[in-house]
Amino acid sequence: MAAAESPGEGRMMEKIVSLCRRRGFLFQSSEIYGGMNGCWDYGPLGVELKRNVKDAWWRDMISAHDDISVLAGAPAAFEMVGLDSTILMHPQVWKCSGHYDLFHDMMVDCRESKKRYRFDQIRGRWVEAKGRRAFVAVIADADAEQEVAHARAMKFFNLRGKDADKLVWDGEFISLEDVGEVEEVLAPDAKTLGSLTEPREFNLMFQTNIGAVVDVESTAFLRPETAQGIFCNFKNVVDSSRVQIPFGIAQIGKSFRNEITPRNFTFRVREFEQMEMEFFCHPSQSSEWYRFWRDRRMAWYQAHGLSGEHLIMREHAEDELSHYSTGTADIEYAFPFLPPGSFGELEGIAHRGDFDLRSHSEGKLDPNSNPLVVELGENGKPKYKGSGKDLSYRDPVSNERFIPHVIEPAAGADRAALAFLCEAYCEDEAPDDSGKLQSRTVLRFHPRLAPTKVAVLPLVKKDGMPEYAQGLYRELKKEFPVFYDEKSAVGRRYRRQDEIGTPFCVTIDGETLSDGTVTIRDRDTMEQRRVKPDEVVEIVRRAMRT
Image 1: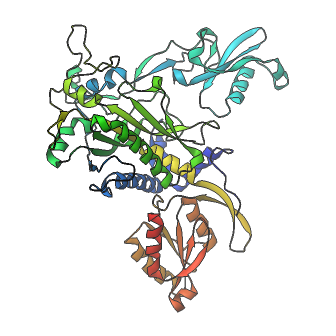
Image 2: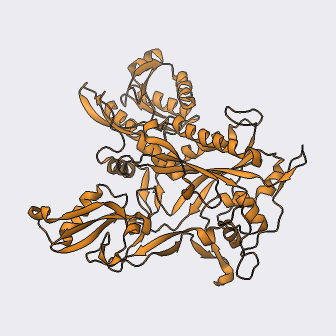
Image 3: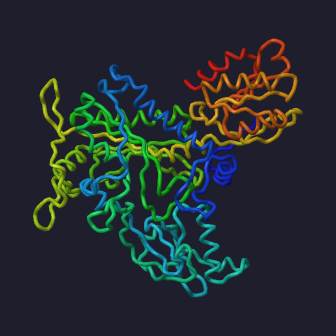
């Protein structure tokens, strides 16, 4: 079997997007009306994949967690519980959390194309021709940015292909932030220079109104993260569940961010699902817990199929840290749409200290203060008042009272599903029904994540094979998502299942009717062996446990 093609080679992302559309993983939202930028619908296979990712995360965090044992690398035993908070919350939540003031990007508008861009995502190079000089700008993560810049420069200076040597490039690609002469910038979609506005702040929260009257008092926001619902319910969980520190509260749910330039398939979107956990611990142990969760979350991705060469952990430099964080590490993946050697964030593990509980109790903390103190307004009073509730914790053994520190592993379900899709995609060669080598596309999902676990295939539609296959299908369906297919040659049916990532195919043939055995085929090795029908369930279960 030929070596598989790895992400980043050729036009890999185009192939993945095409497969997702063709086989029902992902569709453009509102496609029949021209689509909605930054919004995607999960099709029949995509919804199963994403649900499997969320189930695997929830199982690791909550349902399979051992509350009474000390896990390897953990400073102590800890408890885990779940939560599902509302998307709409009191506006004061977002003021005390800092989102109302700080949750923004710098943006620029193009007066000519009427398009909007994030200021930090525009790069370009200086070029001269015909006695003129211009900074040719491109989107920072565009494929082959030099080729794009070259084509735009040729068009701008009205040069033919034979005159390409008349372009004189000056320096390497730099960010638009480092360019002083804005009037000499050729915006990414413009034909003339100087069409970009000065950068300005753009709040990323979606605003809405609650109630029958639309006024200032009715203003609310769609949540930009799920974490604040956990912080606001800290005391409720402690009082009702009798959990003791250290413990974690996990949540999966929709969040919304009004991204200026959503792009790269489902990587940067306006509506997405988060898998977040807030881990509450004693301040003296917070550094140990930070290291534990950082390492454990990295191991989770590796256990589910992301390879070492495409997956890294990057500690944030001090100037990258959020205002509340004393340490943050990003787990990053080499997505195929990124330039070679570049990585995109999958998950952030942040040491948030006591910022959140204190803010919701006392009032918004000043991010410029160290140690953190409540931020004051022009009148000398707290800029945004907290709830006034005591969100401290009293240790039932030592009777010590303190504000817990928080470690937050925050992952995107959509980004995780996309990373698993990209990692699973490969192309190789395999023999067809006649023994001739044919190219095939395979999604090598971990069996735990695969949308369909088993396909049941009668060899032919006669001699009692369909009836036997249908009976086996119904039995397996009680345990796993199973697909039944009796159309076309069996080799072609194998290819269809390979392309959607089904780990096993079970074929019913003439031998089945005589000795009661079936053929089970492995997606990755293509090995086929005879087994008893009742062995199939255990084979699949074993694969899902590994």
